[in-house]
Image (cartoon, rainbow, N blue to C red; front, top):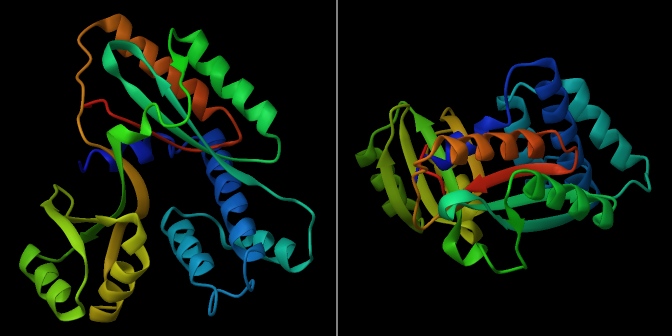
Length: 239
C-alpha cells in the first residue's frame, strides 16, 4: 500500500512546469482552507496542515503568504472540490481529485484525457469502492515499536504500520487524520515526515502486462498532470 506515496509524487517533478503546477495546486488548497475558517494557522488546523505540507514540498513562502493574504482580502475566487472516477487498460482504475471554478470545463477536460488514451470516465461510485480513504504518514528516524508505544499512550486509531525503505509508514482512517497527526507531533515535535496526507489506497492492485497498456497509462497520467484543475491522481497499478 505504500506505493500510493509514489503515485502522489509522480506529479511533483523538478521541472519548471511541474513546480509551477505544484505552487498553483497548493495556492488553491491554501486559499480555500483560509476562506473556510479564520485565515490564521495558529487557530485554523486545516490551514496549518496544508502549510506544513507545502513547506515540505519546497513551496516558496511568498506563494503561501500570497494565498492567505488573498483570503484575508475577501476575494471572490472560489474552488469546488470534485472527484472523477475512470477506467484504463487491463483492469486499471483511477481516481482524479480536482479543485475547480468551472465544473463543466473540468469534467470535459478529464473525460478527454481518458478518451484519448483508450479509457473511459465512469459514474460516481464506479471505482471508489475499490479504494480505501486513508490517512498516510511516512516518518524517518523512528521504529515500529516507538510508533506502537505512541499509539497506545495517545490511544491512536492506527490501522496498519509498514516498514518502508525510507522509514515507517502509518495508515489510519481518513477521519482519524487530525487525531493521529496531533498524537505523533505531541510525542515528538521534531518528527520528520516524508509524507503526511489523506489518500485513496487501492484494496487490490493490477500489474500491466503489455507495452501498449503501459504506454496508454503513461500518456493518461501525463495528460492529467497538464490540467490545472487536477490536484491528485490515484490508481490501482502495481508499479
